Length: 474
View 1 (cartoon, one colour):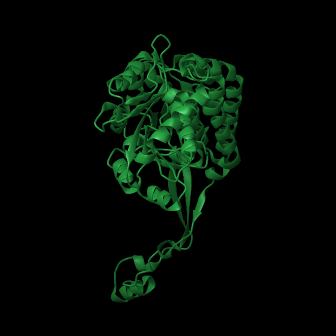
View 2 (tube, rainbow, N blue to C red; view 1 turned 90 degrees about the vertical axis):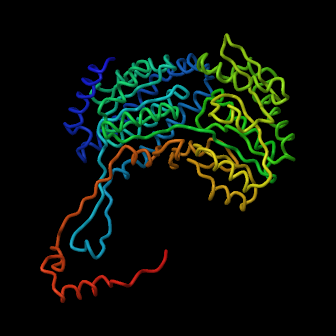
View 3 (cartoon, rainbow, N blue to C red; view 1 turned 120 degrees about the vertical axis):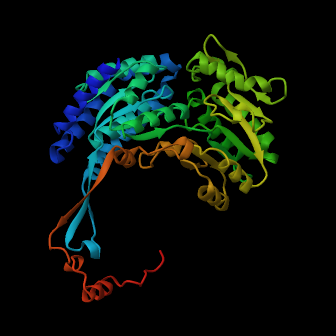
């Protein structure tokens, strides 16, 4: 689709939005609920095609497709149908002395026409989750799936076109040029999930149209395993999250920090957990996925090669280029300036590093760009409090992995280099809405505010507001 066609599609959506179908308070609420129900029904209808597409794009096992794509969407839908109506309601605000002559409230407006740019690693989940929030908030949407997951993108286009009017919600498929043209169009908001490099380009394009942006990026999410942690349970949870979707998860553990004395038993536990879940030959396991394309496959192999003859490759490293399969791989003795520690890995490679004191582990994490997530395995409240209060990241998960993004009541998003903005549940509704202040004068304003400013008025003003007297600390 070229720029002229994109402009025409966006103009149709702007006219549909301006007609007020999604925004009228009472009718708009019913409309949004109906559209969400239609989306839920469409997902159920197209479930077989979506499962097949996920297998075709990523060799994703059916069980993994359910647990990482379909069921989280279902849970989000249930939560929104249960709680969403209350989020739409106007919120009354108590007055203070300056506003005692009227009433105040906050009402929520949709941002307008929004662009959702989805990634390839979870091509269903990371398309539909923000779409749910956008619909609930009353927006019109254009969706751009990733061209790197073409089978899923094609099913999404068919499903959306058969469910919604194109002037309300539509899918536009295409290559990087199409994506670039879309970001340059005058959308009111852009929701982007992907790499930091492309995220910067999206933000720059949006700035030209004064459009707001949500960036869900990623980064090198660390794991801290303390001396009090259960080594095997920690290793199993970490390796499960690392190998899910063959490591192609934005919140996957990127590297582990473990105490020196625990390093060997921890690595042994990682290997045991890999074999327990995927067998002696993980590349042959039907439950183990593949790398999305040859470019990423070669990138990941380049991370491993320097360690093959140096003793740093402690497990794995096997590959099958014909099937884009890369075995679960554990690295040790990694230098901090090596490429594998400079870039988000986004694959089934796990470097294991050591630390001496928790304060140094925290200092190390905070010296690097802010990650999307931080994981900690610890059975003492003291160390847990230190990490929770000092580590700068998008979200923290204690004694587990990935669960912080599965709870619809928890806001999900990044910080700094890992992005900004939040979604899931009420946070998603807020992200796609504009809180508008409304004040109504009921009693007439205080005469003290009007000129001329006499001495008697000044004294009354000081007495009314107790000038010079400050409140207690919170």
